[in-house]
Image (cartoon, each protein chain N blue to C red):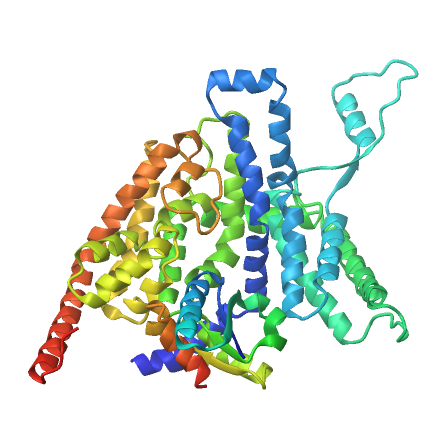
Length: 461
Length: 97
């Protein structure tokens, strides 16, 4: 059975995990984490719902300043995403990453509606039957609407980044580029190399966008609206804020881990992160608009994932780790527990994953898969009944447990942190019976070895 | 002086191992350079690496990397040594490749 898995299943899954498009998307989202975190932390400070605090920041003129960072980060997330996904994909193609990012960025903007204020204002005036006084002219300015720059544009950002960079790489490989003579400095050569592909890609996307607009589908006037209405919105509804699809994602990740493949980065990051990120951004918007933390739109989002499902690392092993340090019978597991404890509190538990091991270990498969599922369901239920707040801030990888609870829960963070302690205890209880059986075996082994050495007249260390 | 580069998914877990390997090398009086990096950043070290070790969770890259880097010795760290962060064992493995 093990042979079959290693020969047939592993390579197939590996191939999927090594897929450069999936990797570029997950690398891209990882790269833009600082953007999201900065935006969320400022939003947190902007919206703390304590009346004297709000009065204070409004009076000293700080409030408008606090609102700015989120507008230029989370509200424009697609811009950062398109650049960095293209950047990372170009690296896998071994092409100039900066140029690829640049091309993806202007292509994305080219298909994003730019309107003129004259048009907007005139439409408004006509619709309301308002007539301007003689000689009054409507102000004219070009405006890039925020609508599709933020979470709503994320899927188009992914598509544009992946397609434009692939085209870029293929065009360069085919030699379709302006070649500079040898003496020219490399920086100039590089920028010219990007010219022709940039032109071609831009033309293609402009045509596609126009083509989609002329299809006259309801509510579709271009690439953005097409993708959002047909793909992103249904995906968010069906897959995003849905506890069942969430559990499915965790199940998949844990099963991949069981085979030794980093489940989170292979599947969860590229597929679910864009969805969950836009759900988090929606929560931040609502929070900024003054909605209470218990009534934000989305229970499931990226923070939910890192704070509850990943509480104590993949597989929620912190409870187990603490137990190992305190109560393991065998020297092997006691030592392992001590070794792994510190990093496990920060969510890094590879030592446990590979040395218990959890990988390819049928004895630990059940708790390994169940613990994070139980943690997630508990988190969901308690949030749904309003004991726990909906989460906002995305916590960076490596943030210690409890602290991550405080960060993500904003002013109600203490509830989240407390609940994390509950998860740690519950997960420990789930692991206990299974761990005890392998611990007993290990202990018996150690006893047998000690006994043998003693009988052979060797010192027992 | 041997240059050893460890690669895993994010570079987090391998960096723990690096410290242990450096400690083991010091105890044996061996001069080595050990560093950890994420898989996407290995290019920066490709010309400065004698031995490339992969964390078990990215073991599937071994064939691809062996093909790509013909003059670098490429290997996969044993799961149990990786899990126990056994610097000495991994160092021996790297040096005896």
